[in-house]
Length: 453
Ligand SMILES: [Zn+2]
Image 1 (tube, rainbow, N blue to C red):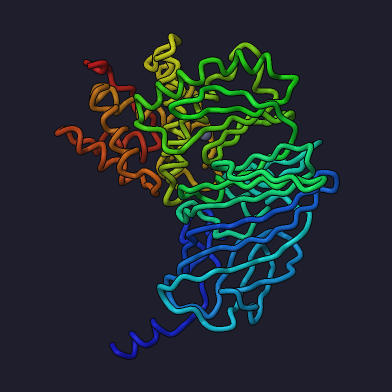
Image 2: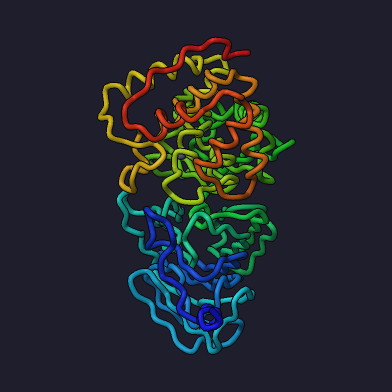
């Protein structure tokens, strides 16, 4: 026994994988991050990025060496606790670092990495992810594994940390990043923008946008809501987003307090296949601004992710329906409360659509390739609608409020949601959740009894 104790205390290598069953190659073992301090310089003409990243972390075991996720950059310097690393290797997206002295279990440490290069996207089942050079600027679309394309990180959603992001770019450009703009300093031809994100954030939700924008105020209070929009789209944008403040109020009523200090909408002058969520910020393409509110559904979807995904973050990727099912159901809630079609009608339509598709997907564990399958969104939303029909609206919204309050800025699992819901009714909910989340067959929609009650 004593022998075993000694061996667990002996420093060893940190795993170059996470415990995630879907994306184990992203994320690392042996430590957790608490803060990222990123200082970046970017040249939009050449696409060159140079960075200094200082991560503050806490060991979970004694470590002789450990890994970070980082794409293809030239490394200039690697330090641990301010001292040159004894050695490092960088291959296949993993930077392995041997500190000059082994790290003790349970102790804080810093790792500093200087890197330079043209960011290359991370290849995935879902296309190229991460830092993307635009015609005139750059954007980051991180979900789910794009973060290492622009900074060294422990790339797993369960490892949430605070951030300071400083970006220096040519002065004509506007730079946006997560959190509050702390300072903006112009030195001759360049400007440095410093943002601070004081609430814990998953690496995939970190973002930077560099382009030319006009600023639009959507609401000054109680939650400041602003937008950055290309000048040519302003008129259409003002109409499309005119109800944004009302949407925020509606969602706070349903889901509880908005979890961050502010919210920013960014429209890039490019076509995006889908909008991109980031913490405290959502990114839309020019194609989502039609001057007819044709994409208001997606505006609601992205705003809802601030609660479901960004404040309450997945403990593992297999719980993805907790993001997408909830965001999809939020689209229906916004429709219903803004004078559009009722959630019940939209549920019936979604049910018919699912009935015509293959029934080979388990919502609570769909498999990595089907994480962003449309059926996760629709059937996840239907599971929530079935819960609302079963509990009644009053108890259903009490579940959502308890859910967002209990797990605010934390990580979540399907099991935790089921336990939360069960506290609001004496009726056993096992069968409801088993049929909707774990079975592949499509259940009938429960008939409303008093679901507005
Ligand atoms: Zn989504």
